[in-house]
Length: 108
Image (tube, rainbow, N blue to C red; front, side, top):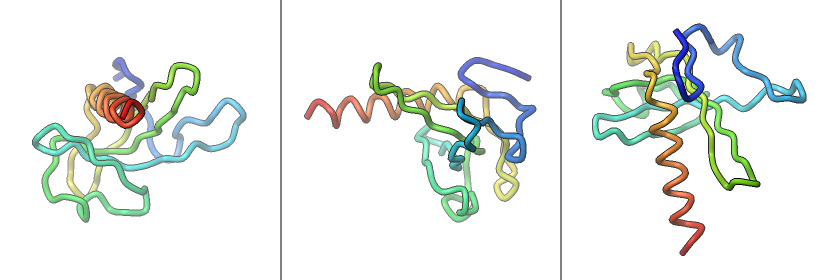
């Protein structure tokens, strides 16, 4: 299944995207809690140590474009410890959260 905002259910951590210069990108983990707030953390931390409930969870790659000062996000995979998968709208939710938060900090 492929849907907007960089989500692809066929991807796994083993075949995750690479940057344009063929260097592996940094992969992080995330959960979306019941209040629709994304929590982003190190890929070394198990999902279930961050929360015991989530509406979706998985892995993500965050890119920042210095020209547009905008974040873009790609979500994929699932949490085996929480038994939930990345959802189609996760990347858009996280992008909106990051771009809104960054814009607020940048303009203070």
